[in-house]
Image (tube, rainbow, N blue to C red; front, side, top):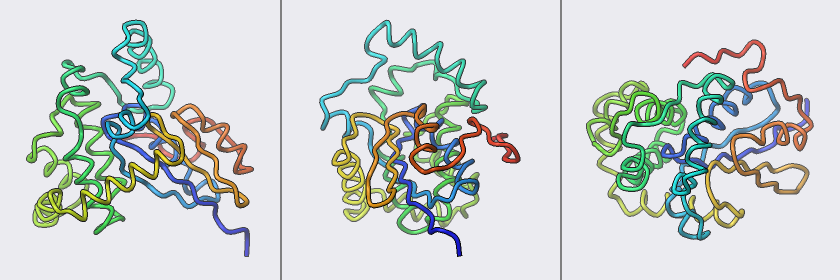
Length: 226
């Protein structure tokens, strides 16, 4: 028997484009590296409030940088990411509370569906400029991810259940306890130590911590097409 897989947690919110980039890279590597990837749906608004941080797009120079950065990363990481037309409305007004509660319910009842459901929500808001605050949009994403209409409706109804609300709150608080001030946050548990890495651009450092080989954002033999 080889060494046991190391646990790697990814805290993310589908409102965060950089979370999508980190998510896709880790999903590509989860069967390449000796890791157990645990997806942790969290609420970026709660983390920003807890840490006193503010969205980088509120600073004009950062906003301009983000626009250019995303264009380059779209090509480099091969994720079809583009800004919604009404960016500030999506980020600052609509938010992602219902979507993240929905993914929390998915994780609680059908964890095997979480990766696909998360990806479909990102595709809607960050690739096709569709509204993920609309319940019908969430249902459509869930069905595209492979859920039955009945399954999807049942999970959507549970977004108002106390246990789902509390679970999302607990996961968000866990990210804060690790030191999160934004998302994505990757937490690696290696040799009895815990390492928190912020952002989607720390995967080479993660490989170093794990003693694994970094082969770029699209490792050979792993398809990147979404």
